[in-house]
Amino acid sequence: MAKVGVEQSLTNIQQALREKGYDVVELKQDSDAQNCDCCVVTGLDSNMMGMQDTFTKGSVIDANGMSADEVCQQVESRLQ
Image (cartoon, rainbow, N blue to C red; front, side):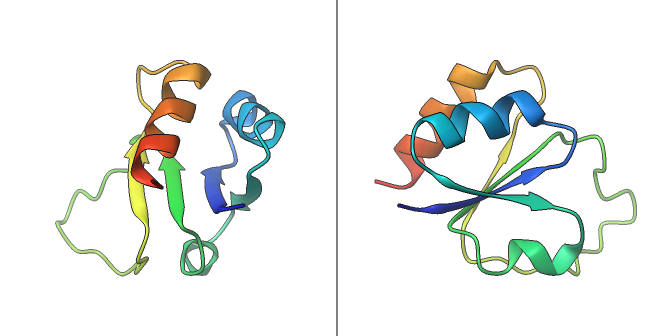
């Protein structure tokens, strides 16, 4: 199953993705995202300076305003 990185504060989304069989990794530092097929973030840590130093080949989903089910649907659609 796909490896999904999820921001630490999104515990309900971590749980929902685990229940669906995904390999969930907590994103504690920038390097955690590198080997993930998809990353879920809150958008609260948006890049104010317009500089990005995190590199991931996977999709990034902004979970701000979304339910756990909606995020799961987004993950599933992007990993197909």
